[in-house]
Image 1 (cartoon, one colour):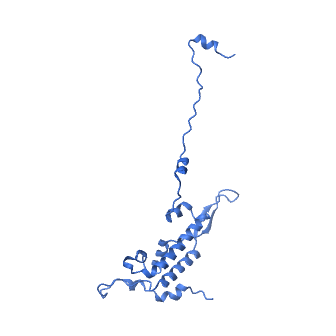
Image 2 (image 1 turned 120 degrees about the vertical axis):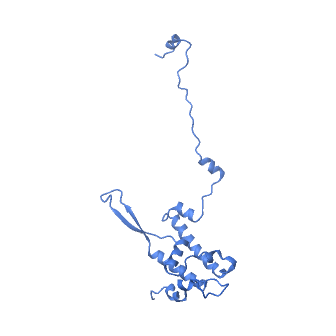
Image 3 (image 1 turned 135 degrees about the vertical axis):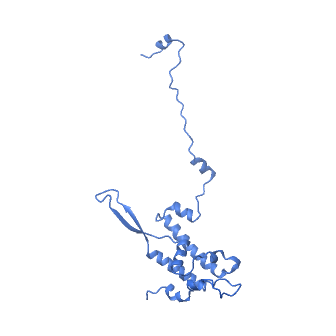
Length: 189
């Protein structure tokens, strides 16, 4: 098995960034050519992005807080989350395309053939983030915001989660006396 990725095998089918530039000789009424000649080419690029993201984890630095090595800085790899912005940055660094917005928005149905692949890519990104957040690899709150999720609470739960102040009334004042003499007589001995 060779180490050449599907992406490397298919790279020659991609147009370079220079091909995507607007030129004076561009025929009137025609837009830029598609950066991906087929949905399969987009899928190959996404698979390569996923493998590169997995192969290059984020390095996290932490300080040991106790024990004989307290204060020592350690570094360890952390899974890199898949994201549309990360994928687009990867595409740009590889001089393929700046944004996938036209593909994702699909105005006028120009990119209908790509929608199934884009949905699959989005599903993989969602699944990777959600599953890693569920087991504590990623910060749950950040991933929930990114995935546009929120915890639903019923009205009863919302009301019960509101802390009601506790007011305790104690009658600790001494009894009122009608005169000073009655106060002295009411003293316990």
